[in-house]
Length: 508
Image (cartoon, rainbow, N blue to C red):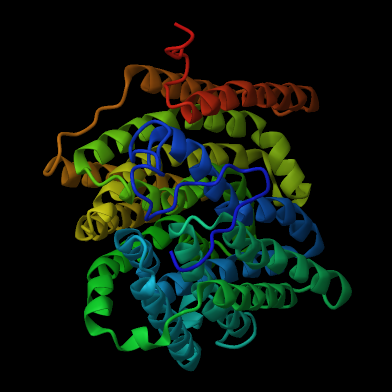
């Protein structure tokens, strides 16, 4: 590898991507790169860094809900959704192609750096095109015009999309320290700058959004120093065509996924108004934590799974890791749902009418389960450079979601929007299961993981019937805190390469 690897202090150095069998663990072994212990061990460090944006947003969200008027908070939520949409178009699936290219080339990073240069240029061109046409598409999404918050969001997008690709290259090279620094400037830095502007300049959504611009630009500059894009790569036709063959279906899949998860803001804003958008954003923030972490997990695990060259072994590892996630999700869904009355009151003032939002939190949290199932099959397909089934499955999910949402939005309100997303993700998981079953015998989940998951979901649903008095809410929160014990015990077992509750060979 032509660039040095960064490591956090006190960490054992990982085996380099291009090392031979004498110096690197066997891929797919419990403790080797790509094995279950590696995925839930060092791989989880990358998941943690990717999820910093979620952690920071979770901390900042209740502050913003109190500093901004409800319409301003709703406008900011829609702007964040717009940033996510534009980022998908600006990245165009090149981040995944870049990761796979870097792992496949092992010691040679020339092609990957050339692909990074092409991706940075493409992101800039997409953002310029969006800015030039914003006066036509912005009102359709519920924004008053193509200026104001929309313009600042566009300035946020170009460096933000480039940062995603920089992070992908650093992750593929297993350079944890530079990856962490770039990520922190991109996420924590943007939030800190935004809060500073909000407190000392003006309390408005547009002023806060300028903090994101500053954070993304600084992260991008640092990323350029560590990755050194090869600008001649923009003329490498075969390389770019190969990347687009993987990336184009992923773009359609990502766009459908965006509408599936974040498009609710536009639908609710258009039909129910900005105030209801703000209420849904609060419930979604509380309930969607695990699904977001699963999205980051997909990003963190892809290059590690790609390092397992035998596809059958890789599929077995993916199936086992999916079952491990079911254990963790069961305790997480239970904890979040039970604690939701208290969490909602932390995130927003009483003027948001919080008590009816607990069922929305539960439905949103439940969506993490089919997300985990779909993510497992999706990871296998991407590592095989087969992306078309992901696009078709996402289209199935999108159509299902829109039909269910528009059918239930009027009678059920915000809960109807959440149910639309849940049913859509379930349809996506079934479609991807059919796609992978045509190539491999489907890896059925272990009975123990399904029993734990279903038991936790049943308990979470039952907790919705409990009263939301101060005494009950304290008891709920205490019970949710206790759920952290089995959660971390299960995580520890998975890091050791074994199923939770199953004793290790040494203990036996």
